[in-house]
Image (cartoon, rainbow, N blue to C red; front, side):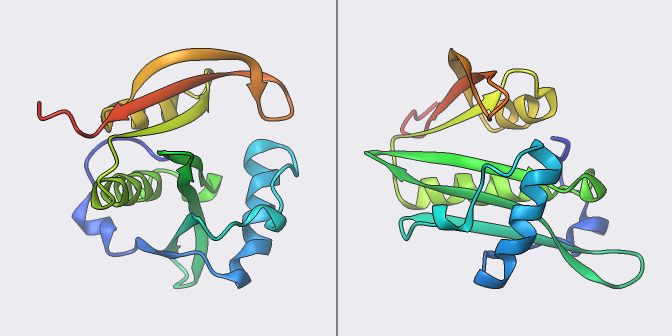
Length: 163
């Protein structure tokens, strides 16, 4: 995940948010293995009711690369961030923050009352990013997160709160 500081306008032009395409799926599966150390994610998990956001960046060599992605959608009557990942070589470029802003904008556009996510309790960078967007801790799910059985922190942000 990227840091939670404001987007640097000198670097923001290199960030492009777009919908994930079918030709991105191999790169997403590669990033899943690289970031999470498992091959738990599969293109078969793609559902029509999920929105897949993708972010790319242009490196010093001028090449563009899919460097981050997020998956979110409705689960029951709540809006959920299912996954947000940034390639290690692309961290610090505000890609995670850009995808998080896209998620929050979509939740508000859909006028949902609250949004939810789960994150490994050990992922301090992700926790800081989510808390910076108003998410609050709800509870811990023991030995739940990823195949390694890490504890997951369930987080929620209320979007109908006028304060």
